[in-house]
Length: 326
Ligand code: ASN
Ligand code: ZN
Image (cartoon, rainbow, N blue to C red):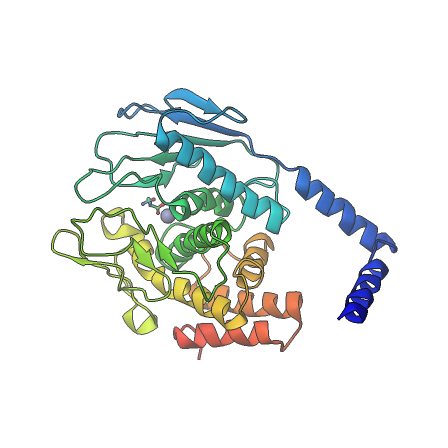
């Protein structure tokens, strides 16, 4: 064992920066380490004026209000995924400040990204708890900002479902990384813990088993399909969730889950890297469909990890399983 350790050390020494390319990479990771978030949390005090009253700025200590601290920490965890794993300085890659408002409106059962900031409701207290409780929901909302600054997927029909799905993928990876969970160990639930004990359900969505997250007399049944056989071709208007963007997202969500677990290890190092590359490559139309996105992920898997490798095969198989590709 002693001998092996010695050999490992000299292998490491040989990898010290020597070529110009290595030195550049060393500089880049030094830069990544120096990225730091600029967070500001506001309180709407159960009104609807945005952003509301400033209650905690970057670097200030925790306050008495738990929702404020949960939002502050969740913003930090999301910033850390983008900075430390993907070497990205905030959502726009240029250090965009992260703004969030808590206690928005009364009994507000949602959270959203308004194009400039995040907004969190307290939940009605009967069926929903505070939307700041789930770090994956915080990662989801912030990722709408990331998508806005990158691929810009139009929020309707298949490109809208991809917009939703990418938010779930990165939101889930924020949570998995905080919890130090591999793809195999993660629960792949979005919004676990948001329901009160009154609700028959475990979370808002399941990426692993879309359609099974809840089945409740008040909320109805989780409507997500697990493959293209259940795709819901709804009218493209707001009354129909812009063509079922939160419904059909189950299909690409499950493809991501299958790709991540097929590759193995931590989702953010395998499937996450591939999805990030597709989002930032700048070569997809804003109204891309599932098939166009799927083909881009397969191509990207090959160029990052090697053509024909296990990553490319896992991604290809994932899209076949959800019946986007044949
Ligand atoms: N929580 C929802 C979302 O981010 C809010 C919405 O935009 N309908 O998708
Ligand atoms: Zn969303």
